[in-house]
Length: 296
Ligand SMILES: [Zn+2]
Image 1 (cartoon, rainbow, N blue to C red):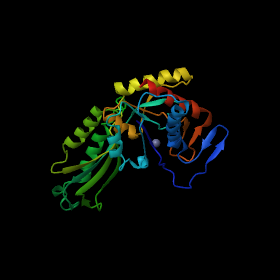
Image 2: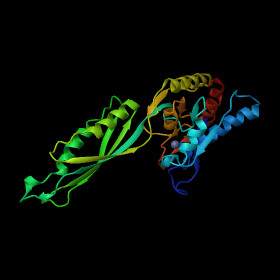
Image 3: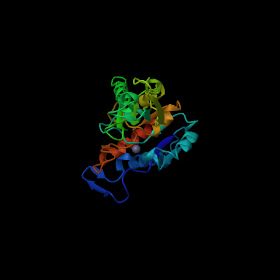
Image 4: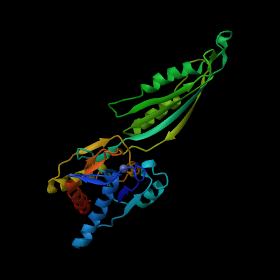
């Protein structure tokens, strides 16, 4: 299965479509309209040359990837479930590398309940929710493990009403990115099972799931080896890379289907007005995609 998306982050009319030397600029040109063209022309090459690629090729292109593939995930899963492999024609990394892994993500909202009291007359009767939150933030930030590829970020924290009142409520939001299912579970358990430090304080955790990680599985790396061999024949240099951002490749790889991402165009600056592709690398990258298909 070849997977891609035709939506972009740019509003309609926000960017012009222009060619400047070897660079082609335009909304979504790199992420990933050029990847859709690669997919279609790779298949067209087989048709026009009368070559049988030796397998059925199914394309699934969705229009809601940039906002989380909410409506298309079930369609992708249904179409890919019997596939031998998934080739994602998202752009390659700016250095030309293919994407064999992508981080997963998730969020948490933690609400802490204390007890309000007069800060002057009845300080001892209060339970300070902000004090409890301070302990929790320090604990949760330390769940970060750069070596394992896990980042945990408390990005928003709120609480209290007036400076002379012991605050009875505090709320904070946590963003987490991770490379493996093991790390995902470690952080989920740690945040859910955290024990309160301030006597009498209670807490609730809301878990907001995101994308599962695209791990560098054996299947993914075997697909990469096929691409690498095709690249060598074509004289295209690249290696494999684990990247931070997610794609529909995460969902597919997490189903246990060998997935290789980054088989689209070369260029840079996705999600920015500077977005471009390199014109002279467009055809070689299409050839890479087309030539690896018979070897899967
Ligand atoms: Zn994309």
